Length: 535
Ligand code: NAD
Ligand code: MLT
Figure 1 (cartoon, rainbow, N blue to C red):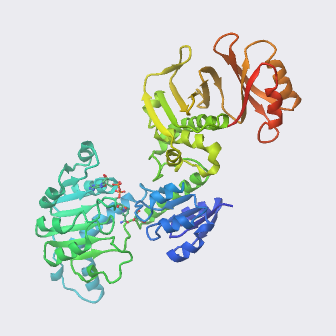
Figure 2 (cartoon, protein in one colour; figure 1 turned 90 degrees about the vertical axis):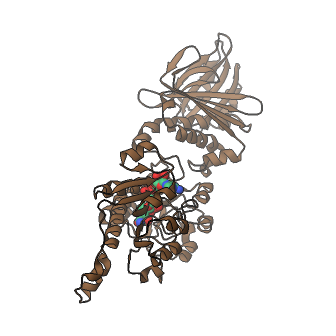
Figure 3 (tube, helix red, strand yellow; figure 1 turned 60 degrees about the vertical axis):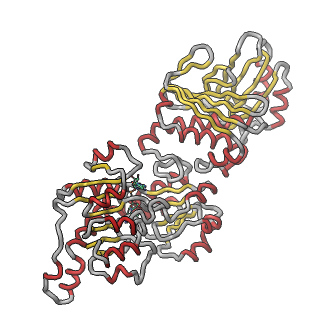
């Protein structure tokens, strides 16, 4: 049975779903060292932000197929190491966005109105409001660094406080700034100079680590309010501490720290800072959403399905996935053909998308083709995650083109969508083309220029024969004698008397058509080639 370890707390709702499907070890709070010792036993690992899925852990996790990050940030997961090993990394990017945005606002208000200190004073028997005089947000300017899911929600919420919203995010369209009512500022330092409040909402990476630091605090307005509910270090801790001490920053709200947990952090000594222990996503609603999402995604992923929130795959929405699914299936089957009929290494793969399919995000379809291509020679070692890397490592050059005009195959047939693949080896090229039927089933419509309309399924025979009477009869008689039923059959030729292509879907007892039977079929007069292909 598939074994899953849930190494940090997730909602019971998610856990229950997982337990119905898999053998689940729920080990919240497990230490990194202990996990390292036992991780080799598991097919899937679920973490939040404490466990580090680093190179060492990945190297030890011999069976691991999926890492489920129950949350957004994957800075605790070494994604390239996972990709190299074909381990799928999934997260739940939408599930805790609202909570993190609301926590940002909470931290901001708590800080500027001294709520944590006032609470503490009252609870310890005091009643003195003088130390807690704060400031208003009304009429002030906020600068948002990173206008993604959370940043944009913070923008709209702060606009309702009558704040002017500026944003810095070099990676999004102007339309997104307009949609969220934020003035686009191209230069981070200009934003810093103009704002009364700054809040960061970028991922943590080399570029964003310390993006607000000493240099920015030097040019900021005196009395700046700073909030970090994204990741520790995006606002440099040392610089922030100094800026608070120097009176440049009047208030701060911090949920995340450079080192977590962060005992003895000097921030905790300061009055004008509201701090929380990385609990921005900790609400009933978000945790149920996160738990259910990660559990459902994990089930799909472990069943070999493509999931929408895969970090190391092209990102697809659930609805896009629905549209693309038949094409993924078709492309994988088309890919499977080559190495089952050719023994020469593929040097170059050309995939040409025509018609409607060319108008979709085809990246995943291409990956599916590569997965199918390598599967006959690499077996389970290849999956959606590592197929492009494995193809590249084998020296296969990939060329993809798109043409939204419908394309015909052979003599003038037109397909609303067509995928054409050409696989080149050192000596020649194999062309295979396919489409989706009105029932949304995969169809192969051309092979080496032979027109056809076949359903690539189960075990199939691809046979080249001389186009003359008296060849097909003896051939099919042998199949009958061997107890092999012909489920479907088609013949195709370029011209009369030439070499024709015969394709047969067959029902076999075992897994495939045995080599002894293939030998007999090849010996039939007029048969040139017999290839068995499993789809
Ligand atoms: P997101 O990917 O939707 O948005 C991030 C935005 O940052 C994107 O628009 C991106 O273009 C922008 N960005 C990237 N590099 C940038 C740069 N150098 N300068 C300016 N902008 C840049 O992510 P999200 O879901 O909004 O999450 C934002 C952050 O919040 C992440 O760090 C995430 O881990 C964190 N988070 C924290 C909590 C919590 O509990 N405190 C909860 C959820 C998410
Ligand atoms: C996240 O990235 O989703 C947050 O840090 C919250 C969490 O890890 O639970």
